Length: 137
Image 1 (cartoon, rainbow, N blue to C red):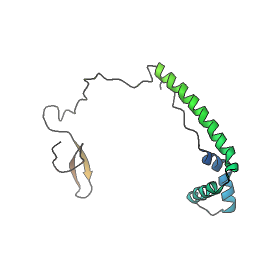
Image 2 (spheres, rainbow, N blue to C red):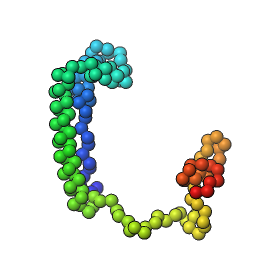
Image 3 (cartoon, rainbow, N blue to C red):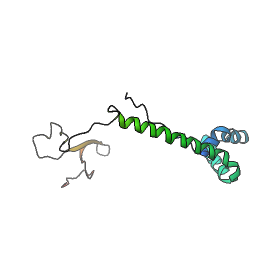
Image 4 (cartoon, one colour):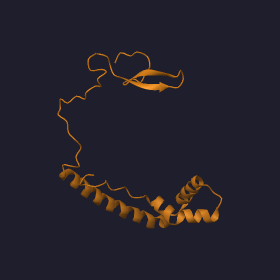
């Protein structure tokens, strides 16, 4: 694990904060037989129909959470930039990834072999055009 830790997670939106605090409870109380998906759909309908004055509390909480997230993210980025451990490896400009030993001594282009469920054979597929036929890439 690196010194900079994990990247901070984005906060919930105002709608999700409302759903988690009392939206789901309210919908489940009125419709106990409703499915999880329908709870979300119904919650969206209620949220859109809600007056802006009722949404202000949740929008302010979401805005505050986003401001805190941006501060934490900035600290994390600063720490990541200062720490050599957190940086991804850099390669020289002339670095070229080695092909597998199967292609190292030939001019044959690399192919990707996958199982073709239609004719139950292994069929080569071009990495650039994803075609089974011979291509000229």
